Image (tube, rainbow, N blue to C red; front, side, top):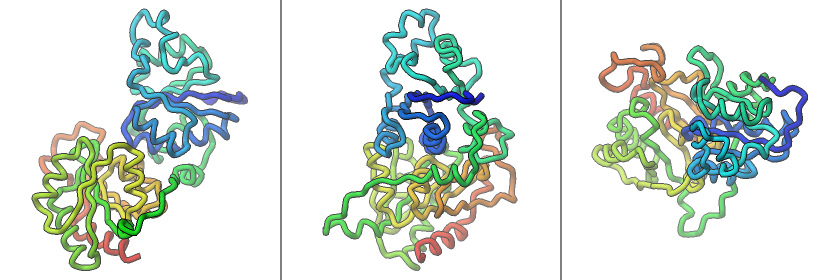
Length: 332
């Protein structure tokens, strides 16, 4: 699959996905520059994700999928609409499009438009993939990068303005995100609340900060119901604002989610609770991350049609395991 020996000065990547998959694609996006002597990497993705990638300096330019008119490539008359696409794929030396299916009409249209300047990558690794998900675009394209180098490329840095005197205690806040992209991956809110209470009794006297995204309303409301410690709910208006909040956190506790991946890659002390997902494939890449689960109970089932479980995932770690890990993290 690799365009061997070719220099691609301007590259466009089309990646329509969730936040977690996007964060795990960042090492590959960065590697494109060295692999193909690339000077400019542009991306077509969800609008707020593009703002994040531009803000972190991962890409030179991001185009929001909303309003791009690339949906016109699905129809039979797409040839007459090429000049209306934003961006125009014909203006790039190479276009890499992540696709959920080999029969994706956009993939077929890109191949017809660009010929050997178009490369179609699967949106996710196959079910039997045994390595980390971040390495899959590398191996699919024949790019010989080690996992150690990939982890280095996963590290994120952001310039945080100095805290004012009034907000100097903000760095002492513990941050919890009780949601994820799938309710099956959410640790029970009652147990989260118990961890918050017992940690506050033992070693932590500060305010908890609870992150609430667009799909997290139910999980956060249950924290309200169960928690008996003071906390503040934060609803970041953008991913860049979310990065700012995470960067000022003492430590982070969350499920297998895009927010957890982001906190981990920002170098925050992170506890990542895994349940139905395969932690060997999907664990966060940050250097100060501890993954918790009870893997001996059953096999990962998040991407399979599992219908046997009626309650919380049996692979979730115990409340005491989460409390102990967080106590050790805060005490560092």
